[in-house]
Length: 81
Image 1 (cartoon, rainbow, N blue to C red):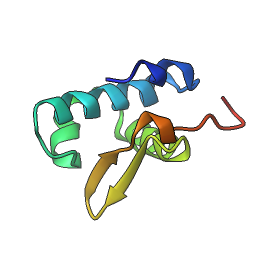
Image 2 (cartoon, rainbow, N blue to C red; image 1 turned 90 degrees about the vertical axis):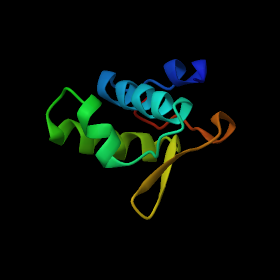
Image 3 (tube, rainbow, N blue to C red; image 1 turned 45 degrees about the vertical axis):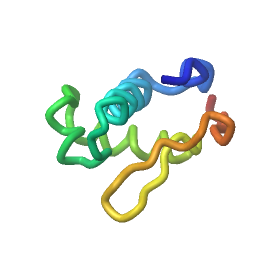
């Protein structure tokens, strides 16, 4: 897990999604909705918003139905951060 995540000004839900993705990655599990949803405790609309937020900050990208955690060196603060 990259500590830089806490300096991007993300929402609590966005940070939570990152932590879920980092945990899945450390467990060598695919970063898919199928694996995320059982760990996600907030409403599904918040999950969708968090995905958008992490994409806006260049924290994640997608390949097909899989999410990819991008290197922390590529992460960006947005104007809203």
